[in-house]
Length: 211
Image (tube, rainbow, N blue to C red):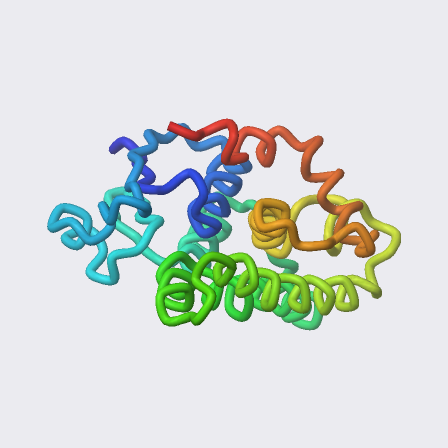
């Protein structure tokens, strides 16, 4: 069997998602850091892996994959992770929670977007922090409301981690990094605590993989 290789960056939310999933699947992998701060993602070597110049890229099962949500679906289907319910109504609710972060919050808060926002801002010194707080807090407030139907379970929607948890935890890390107020979001904090106790999540934390 070919070696599994994850090209990632320790603070990348999308990479963090895949580290969690690989741990849940108990798949050994070799991590190769792609430094987003120095622009290594735009190097010829990385563009050959992903013409978008993004991380993560996962080499597994003889394939080379990009886009974290697509890769998560592949891992779920091939490793039976149970990240999504089989029942259609429950499945779409889990996906909606995950997409509210991975599709709505994350893209406007990635390094390229925030860097450009700071560059064109009249107050560049505070622009990054202001931008992050402007989008992360409302997004998490809405997520908290969406969790209202799931009060009796430790994770987002069930007693085991799902796709929503994998997307939420990296976003909480970013919220804390940028001093976004989340202390008034008790259900999210409950999920965070449950995930912190799970070895697949704790081993994937940026502090555990920082080069």
